[in-house]
Amino acid sequence: METADYIIIGGGSAGCVLANRLSEDPACTVLLVEAGGPSHGFLFRMPTGSYTMLGKPQADWMHVTEPDPTLGGRQVMWNGGRALGGGSAINGMVYVRGERREFDAWIEAGCAGWGWDDVLPYFKRSEDFQGSPMASHGRGGPLAVSPLRITHPITRAFVEACAQSGVRRLEDYCAGDQDGVFDMLATQKNGERWSAARGYLEPALGRRNLKVITGALADRVEFENGRATGVRVLVDGAARTLSARREVILAAGSVMSPAILLRSGVGPGQHLQDMGLPVLRDAPGVGRNLQEHPSFALSRLVDLPTYNAMLGPGQLALHLAQFALARRGIMTSAAVQAMAFIRSRPELDRPDIKLSFAPFCTDLKTRGMHKQPGFSVFTGLSRPQSRGEIRLRSAAAADKPVIDHRLFGHEDDLRRLIDGLKQAERIFAAPAMAKHLVGFNHPETSPADDAEWEALVRRTATIGFHPVGTCRMGADEGSVVDLGLAVRGVQGLRVCDASVMPLLNSANTNAPVMMLAEKAADLIRGRSAAGATAPASEMALS
Image 1 (cartoon, rainbow, N blue to C red):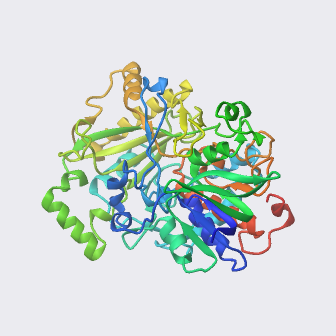
Image 2 (cartoon, rainbow, N blue to C red):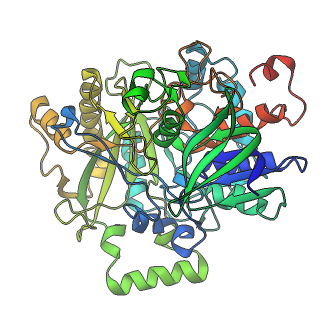
Image 3 (cartoon, helix red, strand yellow):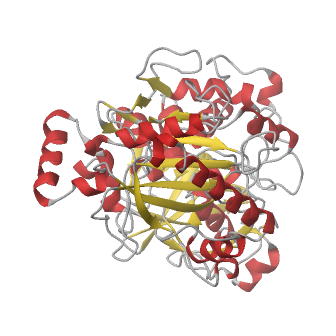
């Protein structure tokens, strides 16, 4: 199949959803193109196997930023899934949707039809919830979402310490309210990772109208008279052109989707000319509005054996056997077992800090697992104000794009993160946690003042692995895509991935991306969330 009705570029979380939903219609053909390879091996299915694939080119894009002056000139690796399933194939399996008012803020940003009440049906439709029935969750969808099979006692201590510190306990954080502490849900089933490839793509592979091409790097979209007609891809260095009768859909993520648009001649005119590329449409917003969650790992040593101290040679063999034979044990654990959304300052009307609790810690000197028991709390800033951009390094598809982001380009982001770190330390001092603490890991001691905190954060802070916004959706002419995710100024081309999000919300981005793709599939097919023909007002979005 070199020609199809729809060509989807990128077999990640969004691409797998689109491939399934569009190929449900036997009257149309779908071609899914992925730069990486399959993701059905043992390490992909074992939840902790993702740790072995991060930083490996066969499964990870391993993008590296430009030197960031707000981090003392450091460069930061932006990991991204490079296999079928994309990020969902190698991520921490965290299932978080976001807050009601954050999606309602999309409406305020000009994205009518994308508020909480609009998107909740798509979250529910995608889901096959494995826990006790709840009104906010769906059953029977492709994406398995489960309570954790194993929870460490130190995780329980963290949840209790949050409660002792005045953080309320949430039983259902998926109903649009994340103000509190809660046990995590994970995208897994029966102890195995349940990626978008596993849930959406694999069940559809038997359809005759769907074809998947792996190992194909997208170069550019081909146009004729302003309409997208196909895609030029590189397979083993050789160019091939795939033809689209109806649409090309970019689902390559917040780094690669804008890069493909730029190489296709859609982007800031001067930058395209500097790269020696023809300007099909001068679109200054392409690559701009890049947003990421700044994150800092607090880590302490404890008196309980945590997962990092349970991985000696003999123990590792036992844990692997537990997983292989019964899908039980620590190999089924998600990286984050509990999460708390807190306020950096008590007077704030809503949380602005996310605490992600992991019952393990690493040795910062060896970069491997610490030999002593410990935990990590990845402290992230919700809704950052700093912005960056994606540019081309050259016109060649093999050259990774420039990621030029100032993690603390807005000083308020740094101040709020530091305040949040101090709030996290107060939680550690609560009785439930304090009784287990035996020493520091990172930092080696608590900073004495804000100046020491600032130096430490600039020296060691990293990202949350949630880039969004580089192909911003909106109703204004400056947006890259319209409210139906169609690229402005051309025909037959859409973008559907995290790059279209106008604002970064406080959640991890995997579940929202699959929601986006579910809604996009309905817009493309002219359906509503209930499966019926969409009303005229919604059809207008497409």
